[in-house]
Each structure stands twice: as C-alpha cells, then as structure tokens.
Amino acid sequence: MLSILRSVLIFPVHLCLQIINLSFWAVLIIFFGLIKLILPFASVSRPVNHLLDYMLCAFGVLSVRLIRLFNRIEIDVEIEGALSKKEWYLMMPNHLSWLDIILLVDFAADKIPAPKFFLKKELIWLPFVGLGAWALDMPFMQRYSREFVEKNPHLKGKDIQTTKQSCEKFRECPTTVINFVEGSRFTVQKHRHRNSPFTHLLPPKAGGIAFTLAAMGELFTGILDVTLMYPNNPRRPMLDMLAGRLNKVILRARVMPIEQEIIGDYFSDNDFRDNFQSWLNARWSQKDTQIKQLYGDK
Image (tube, rainbow, N blue to C red; front, side, top):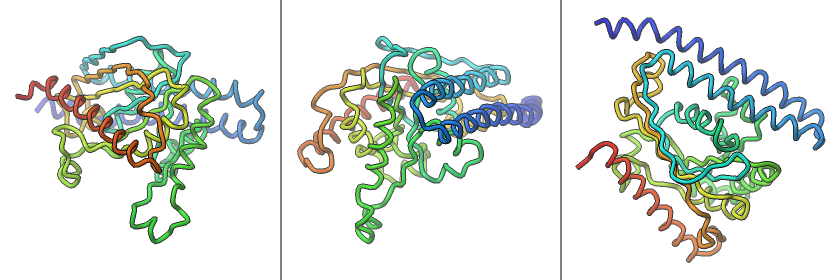
C-alpha cells in the first residue's frame, strides 16, 4: 500500500520535471536550428552543430539525473573495447522503450560523439521532439511496404535516398549513427506477430543498416553492438521509471570492427544481401544469447 502511494505521488512530479527538461532543451535546439536554416553557411552551421550536440547530451545527462533522483536504481554498464569522441560509430541497439533513447544519449555524452537516430516520419509531429530532431539533422524515414511500392513504383528507393542524404551530413564531424534495426519497440504481441526466431528480440531489418554501411563504411571506426535490459521492469520500463519503480538497467556495449565483407550493394547484389542478412542474424542470435545469460534463462 505504501509503495503504491509513493508511486502515485512521485509520478506527476517526476513527469512534470522530465517534460520541463525536454521542453527547455528542445526550445533551445529548435531556436539554433532555425538560425542554421536562415544562415546556411559553414562558418555558422559548424559551431551551431557543435552547440546542438552539446545541448542534446545535456538533455540526456539531466534526464538520467532525474531518474536517479526518483528511483533507487542501479545502472550496470560494461564496455568491451576502446571508445573515443573523435571517431565515427554505427550503433546497433535492441529497442525496448522510449527510455532507451534517454539512456543512449546519456551513455554517449562523455564517451562517444553525440548520437543521431533514424526516426519514423510520423515522429516529426511529436511536440518538441519532432522539430528538435529536425534541428539536429536526424533523418526521418518513411518506410513503404512492398505492396505499396508495387502500386506506387515512383517511390521505390525513396527511403534509401533519405538515408544517403543524411549520411552525407554526418561526414562533417564525428558522429554516432544509431539504427534500431528491429524497426520497432519489442512487445510480446509484436514478437508473436513477426514469428521471431529469437527469445527476447524482434527479427532485425537489414536494409537501412546495410545502406548506412555502404554510404559511410570507410568513416566508421567500428560498430557498437549495444544490448539494453530492464530485468525487473521488462513490460513498462518508461512508466515504472516515472513512478519511481525502476531499480535496474543493464547496458552492454561491444566495439566490433568494420569488415569489408559487410559493405556492398544490398539492393542489387543478391549474394551480398544473403550474406549480410546471415551476418546480421548471427549478431542478433549472439545478442539474444547474451540476454538469456543475463536473465539466467536455462
């Protein structure tokens, strides 16, 4: 009873402070993004981009401090390999919650360049988040089904063109490109609907990440294979966090080399496509095994 009462009292206060933190940084980011739009000169955009990246990381750090304030939480982080803020990385995390984004921004703040997420186009209309992501040059992806493309052949490759244009911007300064290759947050329903061969993951989608590697592969220092877990709050980590009930986060990061075998023409070379899908599924199988071990699955 006391635990429920505590959660009821914490939730509105914590939610309000998280919204204030988000809106404060988003307004600043949008303001400087408009300056960059009005004055599209390298002498202006470069220092503004550095400032925007700092603001993004400041948002993540302050958000996690609020999480620690309202939750008796252990954040268990282990990193395999060396990281640098002066290099380029392609991050492949699993996706469980909106909370993933906050934790990954906080993780990046003092270790690697500010992250850029691939976002669904619908999120452009999300208050503060949509315009803030636009100002930060994050790509908004419009995913078309095979059936839709067959009916509208002029749209074939349109989402890939968006990826290419975004990757060109990322060449200007060290960047961490984050691609949630599952394409959506994990739920039991989605796991069943997609007939996932993995226990704790959705099947990975290879096209976007293959194209990112083709566009920027020579720039990336390595692939960051990141595994996130909320072992005691697997169903509703975001709501539990806001209510003060989140008590543990596990983050495992491993730096993997960029092998020449995973850079190629995914959309025209059938052999490469099959090999790339096998490579990605093998990585996902390893991640699934890691999660099982951390859960203590038999």
